[in-house]
Length: 194
Image 1 (cartoon, helix red, strand yellow):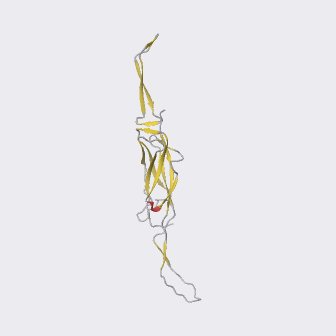
Image 2 (cartoon, helix red, strand yellow):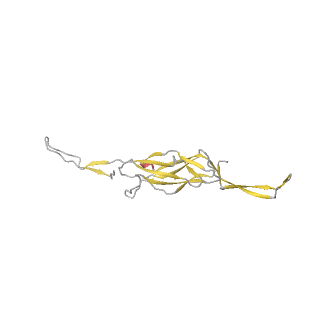
Image 3 (cartoon, rainbow, N blue to C red):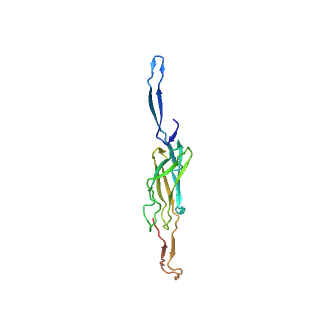
């Protein structure tokens, strides 16, 4: 076992018997022996949770090679995003993230333990005051790349960066001493979502 993922899934060699040894006569025959490559590249997330400010523009998620190496084989894994609370709803044409489905992350044809490859997912900013939101990126086995079972999904929290602005309908009030109640009107500038 060479612990390398090779370009070809198998290698061959030949055995030829062609000599007389004492009283045993070997016929002139050639046999082909196939060695099938059973090696794989084991990878895992460098972290399984992350937080990013809403205005960051994107979030980067990385996979680390933890076992194996490639020898001319262009290894890759697949990944997709899924909503937990982020991206479920459009607000004036703006979504929280750009969802991706069944995309590839490549480790190159000469990857080895310790190599890191990353993907980015776009995060959009809005002017809506809302709770922090979350989404997940899940990575999948593909070809001869295997994901560590406890490190194949990351949950990302988008931290809301918006604040509500409240104003008064008028700036001057007068009231007589010992008067009854006064009614003031406050208004919200900008959207508010909870």
